[in-house]
Image (cartoon, rainbow, N blue to C red; front, top):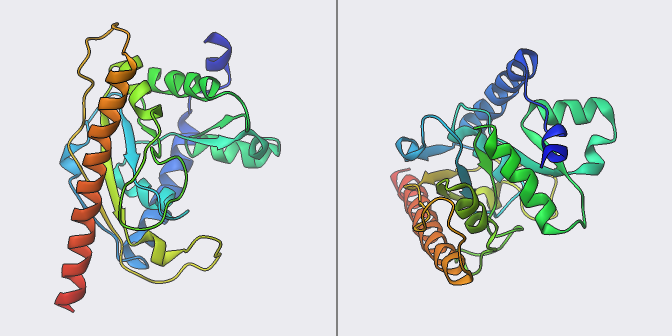
Length: 230
């Protein structure tokens, strides 16, 4: 674990200032161009680490997710992006950390555990990749594993409208209306230090899936109301 932590440098003042500036620009763009509306921010823990688990319908979900909290959010990126030093430095300042593409999942999970150990929120898409449609069908157990391993909560987030902003395979960012609905944190039921069984992980994943569906439906409902109001 020490070797993993050595690759996850803590952000200094300059890096955090850079993050604040870029986040301000990105979030401002999300509110003005994308018409973003965010509900449920009161559910986010005000301090300490947690896992932010959004639905995933577009590449725009990452910048949209930055509007959830003013705290620096951490996320995984393929390690090849860090080979160009200026790009890698910028990504690290923005909260990214490298994961070797094609490596065992356990290596990526170790990196995530190290990040959470630093006390910062981690963004993890439990669907694993971009999905299509309004139904949350299947999740990976990564968020469940991390929650039980670290005894930290997972915060479900439904993002609706991002697929209209940037469809899969498109580079064009369309003007649209997006809604992000943040739900109540989901805590592991097992005690800290207790090894979770496969049944525990599966049960937690199903709880998360239901919560994500609920928040996604809520975001969709709000977006529909906004359209009718116009």
